[in-house]
Length: 552
Image (cartoon, rainbow, N blue to C red; front, top):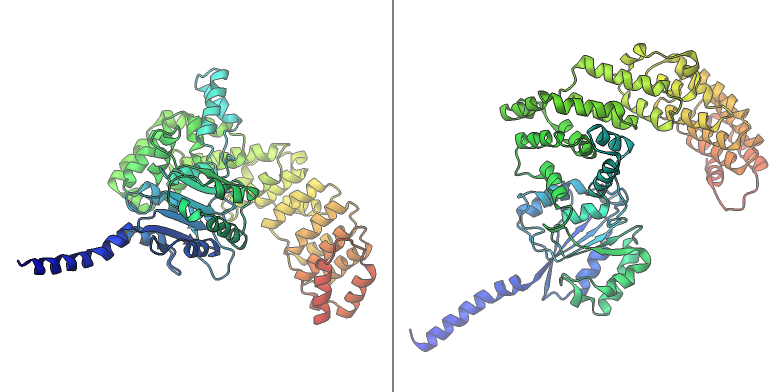
């Protein structure tokens, strides 16, 4: 081939290859925007287009957008996640037009599974713009029964204390731990140890960073002292992803057993069986994961021959069953005991009759206890939302003195006791604020429906002397959205006789949610204006109520 022709061909090949090479050299900034786009927009404006390309992973209206990004083969060098994260369960939005969210469980699945091999494989940095994203506070800790179970297993008290401490460290499950497990091997994770700034506040800070040379520090895999310094007043901190040599690497491997798409259902059930063979103290620390997985097994999965064999092996493991039920009977927290009983039923360690006996024993212990409180009432009412636990009521042995305690009465009422209901409604207008609080919890689950009962409660609230208890009782009625004229009239009298602004505001909270068309509005406005107590802290619900009454 003549020299000229070879030169032309070489030029053509270079021209064809160059755009692909340029694209390959670009770094990819992935963004997951489930709230405001402020942080994403600053990154996009500040990083040179020749060096970076941006990929927004969220596809509006598509619930499987993360899986879609995995299938598309996207590989991120930098990841920017923007969203609220207060509860530590998911990134979410407070915008009504934004329905997408990012559950931590979905991130864990993507991190642990082969279904998403490339998305996080070359990450250098992750920017977590959400509250508490790197909060190191433990979300889970071993309770007293964990130490007792270790002693029962043959450990000395000193060894039990040491092992409990190790379990606490291993299973702390802080937000920081979760992010380090998800973003394994990522050199730099930026996040916040407490409250994070909203996007409109974080944006200008990011902009200052970029104006002082921040672009040169992006995608380097090294923490930026300047960025941390700028965000220091709002708790920004930095961590790195777990590595194979990390002390918690074995724990991550256990967690991934539940999430890895490559593992069959039968293999996961066999892993649960292996967990149940460990110290029961560690089984307790894995309760959340075991409970969620067993409850999610479908009938079709359970009927699969391999899964059925794995489940049957658990059923026949009498030693693990005995250790487990010993722990159940020793559990300090009734909510944990109830959950563990439900898991035992899901594992077929309890027949229907045995399950009924366990639940009856738990409820008997709770009702007979002199230390039960609002959390216990909330638990029993929640358990019996559909009425299926009411069948245990006749089997409970309760003395008159026990039944008269507000907490016991509330729990019995949750199980369908008419006498318990009457006693707890009476407690709502008690002089004892603790009793009022118990009644408030109960009535949140079982609102008053009888108009005569409602009128009696309204009259009783009017006679209450303790302002704090009176406010609590009024707040309970506010949720009922009253429409009975006699009850509303009685509540209005409470406003007139109130000794504190707090009581008057609680009354306003009831009236603003009620059907105040039943009342004479001009007369009500006059009453509110004449009886209103002076307040030094500005406009409140009383002003809102007055405006609405006058507008109508």
